[in-house]
Length: 293
Image 1 (cartoon, helix red, strand yellow):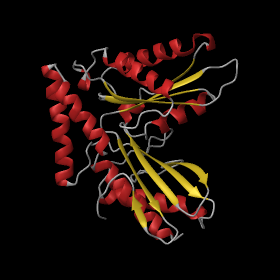
Image 2 (cartoon, rainbow, N blue to C red):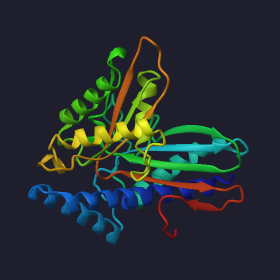
Image 3 (tube, rainbow, N blue to C red):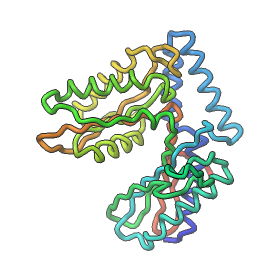
Image 4 (tube, rainbow, N blue to C red):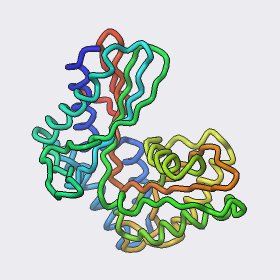
């Protein structure tokens, strides 16, 4: 697969993600605004919606914190030159940092030195998945620091089951308060192990808000947690109101009998994600943003 096509596509979806929120997120925010009964909460939601419109009008990032850049790459087993994909993505991130522009957010944790271009050791982080076929699908998520700082993992008591999970999630929402810039989206995962749960929870944030869980029992649990989280009254930007959470997505892995790992990944209202698929013939299909590039 031609490296330049991968680089251009990665640049385009990164630019799409930081400027244009997905339609499902915008619709959820509009619904929250229409249903908000708190005057302060409604004012905050109006400011958020105005901010989104201005970002689109002026082609500027929807938030000054353009986040840590995470890619999810699903590669067909017949795609050639997969060893060059990472380099193409890194080049795309450097270009986007300069041209969009993006705030440089990659800092060495020991020297405190900022790389200046959103790249560094393991950053942008790339999650790989191998599938059958000859297409290469890429999704980018830019993860803001406020929502990342309240992500939480823990080991629950296996005997507490779903009841314990509900408490763990709602406690996490209450503790997070205003820090993740609510209304938020929650990615929840259980099972696997500590690392597996958090990676699975974070990946759950990629799921559109208008797509309910395919498992009826999990869909019911998502609704219960959604309602419980919104009963906290934290509200938009933590200033009170009916809307603290826009959506809840649950995923899981099988667990060891002695362990019950759980994780909650938060995303702020500026939930930024974009996807594209590169076909074997070099044509590109933009999946989340129907824009001309």
